[in-house]
Amino acid sequence: MGDSMQIPNYEKARVRSKDKVLFRNFKMLDEYLNIGIDKKFFLKTYGCQMNEHDSENLKGMLKLMNFQETEDMNDADFILLNTCSIRENAHNKAFGMLGRIKHLKEKNPNIIVALCGCMAQEVGVVEEIRKKYKFVNFVFGTHNLDDLPKLLKNSFNDSKQNIEVKSIEGDVIEDIPVKRDNPYKAYVNIIYGCDKFCTYCIVPYTRGKQRSRKKEDIINEVKELVHDGYQEVTLLGQNVNAYGKDLYDNYSLAELLEDISKTNIPRIRFITSHPWDFTDKMVEVIRNHDNILNFVHLPVQSGSSRILKLMGRKYTKESYLELYDKLRSIDNISITTDIIVGFPGETDEDFKETLDLVNYCKFDSAFTFIYSPRENTPASKLKDDITLKEKEERLYELNELINKYSKESNDKMLNNTYSVLIEGESTKEGMLFGYTETNKLVNVKGTIDNIGKIVNVKITDAKSFSLDGEIVE
Ligand code: SAH
Ligand code: SF4
Ligand code: F3S
Image (cartoon, rainbow, N blue to C red):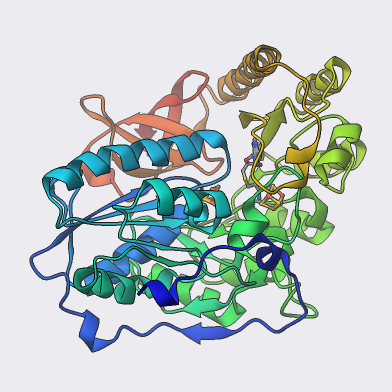
């Protein structure tokens, strides 16, 4: 095993060539089909929706290999961590988990332990695993999810640690089995990787080059989901607005959305949109199709054009606001964002510009983060002289403002009726929960026969992070 070891390499991970993307189809070999018999797996997922969906593929393969899933790590024969690199915090969680698994393995050396996902693509992480976490049986990356069956089989025969991470631009692999977590809402990948190279971000190194799936493959997947009774699809990509650029001359996200709209799936969402590639045609497509939901996640990151430039975001505060205003002209649209505070060199004035932008946009909600330096990224080499205390104060001030506008946006919904996809029982007795078209969480009084249905709900109470309502005819 040791001989075939492949460790990550940032030089190779950074390459973006004009080479055609390789499209290939997954096949499960017969020899892997029985290795899971009488065995259980525990899978823990960190990170974004793309990683969650990768986990649905990992589960799909494991089920096909006849493994059963367990929610109890102590009960598992195979423990797999699908990890995220986006901030230090995500790292710490995964390493904390490895610490716990070490104890388990001391008691039961037969447990197989593996790590995959974005952290597997990091040079420093793999070094640390090789030195300090020798009990980890194998590591594989984001480019070779489909190697799981092979690696798992090998690990039962060979106790040596096996690292198989590819630092390549990446392929598109179709037909990996999938076991979806939610029977009503489905994630559908439309584009992998990212070519934006924002200076703070590790994703272009962990996920490879921007590469679109073929439109037929996407549309067929959605048609099957409709056939299986799904009510909602979320189209996934680090930058869905770049869809098609690498594959077609005249077919972009706008055309894809129109084609998916024709499948009559009741609800279509898409995340994430980079403001750079957002065309006017896209705005009109959202405006003109009922099943393309009026919901856009449009990360701004900062309200200061100076900081945006340092971040490599390739838009200014002004051009962001111009796009924002166009989108806001769509009736009842909900717009959310991501903001980073404490980017190296962010002054009080820069931060004030972010607050001003929030005051102007009045986002429906936002994810806010303290800047976290990432290994090998250009921003991690910039001088960062803002203290953690200052960064925490900025985050606090920003969150207060964000929460105020979330509450305001929810208050506007009081006493009005909205369609809600009911997903399940809420933790509160006699209550269900679901999401509006604008992705707001609603706790709904109602009976369980409504689960999986889109119903009309009158909003009776509004809080910062959720709404209460009751079903009306
Ligand atoms: N592709 C998406 C975002 C993916 S990462 C986009 O470009 O909009 C999700 C969010 O994590 C980002 O929008 C950013 O706000 C945050 N993020 C990314 N790298 C970060 C870092 N090094 N420190 C803090 N936050 C970061
Ligand atoms: Fe990261 Fe920027 Fe790509 Fe988003 S667009 S994944 S923030 S590099
Ligand atoms: Fe994290 Fe990788 Fe997603 S770094 S946010 S899991 S693309």
